[in-house]
Length: 551
Image (tube, rainbow, N blue to C red; front, side, top):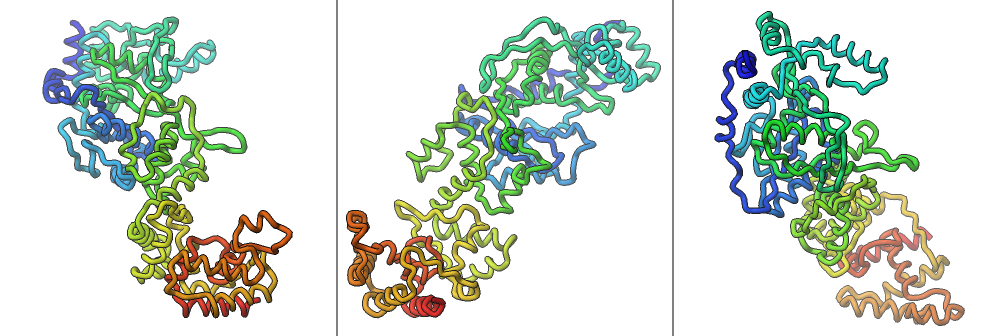
């Protein structure tokens, strides 16, 4: 009896691997095209680190006119959650990341290299496991979980490396006849890879991000087919990435230590290995210590958090590209209105160490992203968010025409307003433009440089009685505030005030601040001229009267 007979005994009815090699031909793509995949397990919410990997994988595939596909790795079915695939598909869709091929719902897929769900590829894995047995590179192992545990305990007592290898691999050296007898006797078994490696030898490998790395060879006889007939991750992804034509495996650097095993599997089965791109995880500063973003401790680890906060998907993607390539920030500065698809992401320029997640930086990026949106888009996105999370804001936005005017302030010019970082900010940032919200609030008029009540009243009265004209253009409007400042003994130019600080109590900017605070209750708002244009003279007079009464 030989290995081929043993393989036929274990897998009598599977197709030869030639069937699958023909069914899934090499992809006909242009030279240099990159084929990547996002291959999550449907075991919980999508982590921001997973989104980061998917974004990078999608980006490099698009840049090179390659293919990006979504494969679901569900061989660990005990941990699977209901609608896990739908959550993954929808999370990617929310961020504008759509796969060219792969799963599109719990049961549907697109593309010619499927099934894209590992639990439906059982027959394929069996064919390749049979092929490995035929070559004498895999074997059935009859050790019970208790026996494997006993081996581990002996290794711990002897202070040697744990694992199933060398002299510890009890079933490795059984003869083919002995293996066949056990199978015929009904003994339970799993299939293990027969590693040709030696731990005292080294392998050199070039990782696209990490550069040249050296590891001890793999000598572990890992499980490739489990007792339930499903493959382990190690074996499944080797077969899948080969048949699906993956050129670059983009994954977290926690998998870096598995490279010797994975390269060995590719080599022993006779496949060309893809390039490995191990990207650093996104870290968090926790009281001065760096740690990975945690699903349990950090709400921002879940991609759903960004939708709940109202941080636009565009901003999150832009922030992640900042992390991916340090050149992105400079590119954005020089290409302020370009789509991020125009940015050329370089895998070999990705950071070797984990980037710190910085919420302040993300919100800063988000302000810039929202500042480039049209008033219509800001309105639509705010309303969509408010309809789900903030009934009061949704009610405020019912008058679309008025809301568009409010959102249109200081938008579309060279230096657009940057007061909104997320849709949950909107209510606070625009509430002063709504009279019912403005007057219902206990307004604290905190005047700054000019704080004397009589002087504030005088500025408001003089302005409204002698200087205000709602037909003025912006320059005329500001010139009148300068004239008013001069008339009341303040410097009508800031530079004049700076040159003679002892001569003046305040300057035109301080006078403008009085008007702004009386009008809005705030010292910091977008362009006051545009605010006045929207309010009109009746509302402005009412606001000034209210401010005077509060003095």
